[in-house]
Length: 241
Picture 1 (cartoon, rainbow, N blue to C red):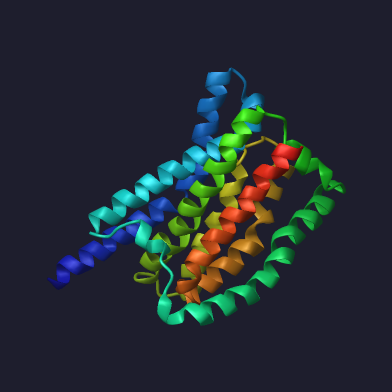
Picture 2: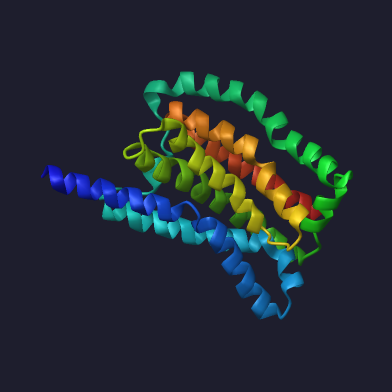
């Protein structure tokens, strides 16, 4: 019985390690597929919200399958804990005061440091695409990313790392790091400055989320909702561009 439990934990740990870089490679894989379909790698870079949405659907499917193998369900991950509801709400509201500077500050300072012009990475990412597709993505992208991204890194991966890794700072660092660097391939533009920018720009925000959820996992559904709202705003930027 004890050996069986140890074996299951070991398998869960190995699965978590494999999942760490999964989204990084899925973003690139879907972009390469789109480049092949369009006959142009440069053209595929415009559709990063579409490749992100496809990746999210795969991530959700993987999580549903893995949780089912553990006799667990996916959607209960997003439940609000009634026992800590009031404390969670006030704590989360306090943390959201940090989110503005942590999310948008690095965008400005990194773009100034790398290019001396914040508009350059913006123009590289937000290129015109079909408005009808944008309307579809306005629903699909924020909903799927709210369900897929933080649940992958901090609800599935982090607890399974925590059972096997003694250095607790590593338990937080690994999902935070991979959450940040996944953006290097969203979209993948073969420009070293852009790759550096994308790899660093969300590191502070990922760190804030990771540290918070390590100590207060009941805040996860609040961060998932916030994440979806922020990325709905991202689609609106494309719509108004």
